[in-house]
Each structure stands twice: as C-alpha cells, then as structure tokens.
Image (cartoon, rainbow, N blue to C red; front, top):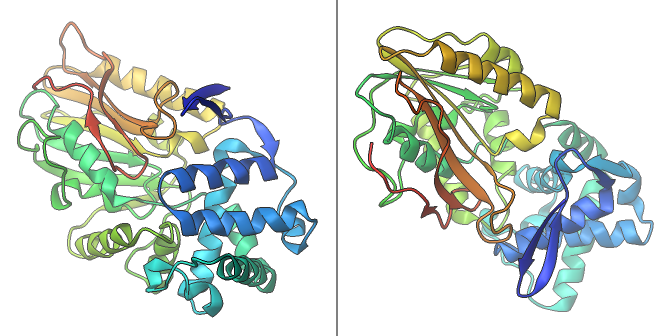
Length: 354
C-alpha cells in the first residue's frame, strides 16, 4: 500500500487491485472528497456508511467487498445525483448545490439529509444496481487543459491524430475547442486531423439520457464543473469526433501510425479501473507503436492519472508524456504537471520547451 502523510497522520490508499471491505472503500472516499472541499458529497457517503454500520437496508444493496480501483463511492454518489436530477429524490435535491439547493448546515438538517439519501436508494434499488455495474463515466472536461499542455509540448510541427481510451462521451477529444489553463502551454497546439476514442459503454452526449448520466458523475457540490460540462456538451454538438464501442486494450493493439502525422494516445483518470493484465497489454502495444515510429510517422503517449508517491490528498494526479520522433531519447517519460483529479490546482513539474 502507498502511505501518504497529512498534518502528521498517515493516510493509506490501497492499491487498485486490492480487494477491500466495501465499508473501507466508501470511508476512504468520504474522507477524500471532504478534504478536497466537497462536504455535501461527503455527507452522501456518510449517510450510506452510517446505515451500513448499523446493518441498515442499504447494506443489503451493496456487495460486502470490492476491488478498490472500481471506486464504488463514485458509483453510489452518481446514483444519488441521478435520482435527484430526475426528480425522484426531491428531499435530496433541496440540498444539492448543482441543482440550486442549500447544503445542510445544522446537525438536524444533516441527519435529515442522510435519511433522504438512504430512502432514495432504498426506493430505487435498480438505479443503484445499475450504477454499481457501470464504470464511472466522469468525462471531466477540466482535464482537457492537461491534454492541451501535453499537445503543446509534442516536438515538431506534424498534425495530430488524436486517440483516447476510456473516452466515455468523447468530450475531451475536442481539447483545441475547450479552455486551457494559464501558464500550462508552451506554444500553439498542433492541428488535429481526426479524433477517435473508445469505451466499452460509451455515452451519447446529445441525448437526454446521456446528458443525465454525465451530469450525475459531477460531484454534487461542484457547480463550476457542472457548468463546464454543459459548455463541453455544446462543443460536442458542433465538433465531430468518433467514439467506438471497444475494449481499450483491443483498441490500442489495433492502432497503426500514419505517414505525415503524429498519433497521440491519451487517457485520464482511467488507468485505475483496469486490472493488471489489461494494463500490460496496453503497455506492450505502446512499446510496439514506439518502436515503429520514425521522423515522419511519430507517436506520443500522454496520460493524467493517479501517481503513487505524490501528495495523495492535495496533488494526487500527474500528467506524463512520452514521445517517439526518431530521436536518441525516444520514449523518455516526462512528468509535466501535478494536481487534483479534475484538473484543479495544477502545478507545472517540467517547464522545458518543445
């Protein structure tokens, strides 16, 4: 396990493939979102945890154990948010900032909120079951700023063919049409020739069902992120991209480099959901593509993922970039920046030029 310290106390994050008690996985994430500054999201998990600890009804709807990297807390929070968005949990919606609600302040209000959360899940067990089966489809478009940072550092001036695994609705396939962050980019972005992503269960952002699903994965305190998603969906409606239903390992293994362009493979907050064997297949395919790269048929691999050894509470994610251009240092890993999962509080780790 990776142990991180904050204010003198150890904070332990299990490895992604560790199988842990459900109650431990939810408790870890409740602490994480609370420290990250999202108290209402934490209250949702607190309410579920309290019922589980007292053998309440929600406990029967959750498996006793879970693979930690499956992040069941995100799935529980998404189920609650979806019920509120769909007006099936009005007592919950009253307190969700994303829906114009007021966070519960007093002890009695928090207790009532806990009861409303639990009752909503008990009344709609199918929604919770479906959310538990679904890999979280966050598709956080704040991470497009990290992709822009990486794209601005790809050597040469060849146009790019952008590829993304775990792409969900494909919103981040439009980084050149989404906002960046000041100071992250070192030059203009390359021209993007085409945009193709894969997901085992892609979401269509142009449908009501798709927009509801994407919105449900926004943490219920994060009004700014909720609005950012709305703007990104509007971009997706006018900038075409292709999203295919395919396993990530199969997708990367089928990739081929094309003459006169740089193929860029990208993923964000996705790696932890993959079991080790599928990670290994992707890494082997990346190595093969790197070996096939030349000065006129280039390859780059960029990712924004959980980084063991960083400050797990305050800057747990890192942006990494590897490029293959026919140079002597092909494939060298460069850590460009660190920050929080959704692309907040990003600090450059490597400010070298192109």
